[in-house]
Length: 60
Image 1 (tube, rainbow, N blue to C red):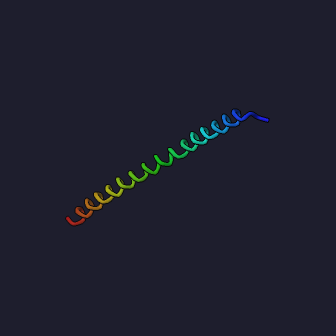
Image 2: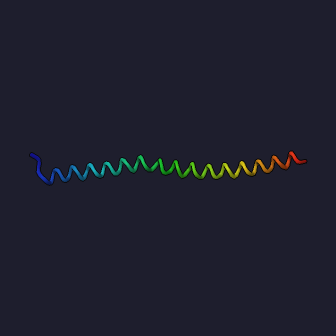
């Protein structure tokens, strides 16, 4: 049978690994969502500018 301290050490190591692994997986998702949100805002702004320029050209 294993000692109590040994089992606590294994559990703590396992929890630390789970936290590190989940932070690796969650980090890129948050970065991707942030990048995607900002990119969509910029794209909408550019499309509105481009459409207003096109309408000016067609009016002339």
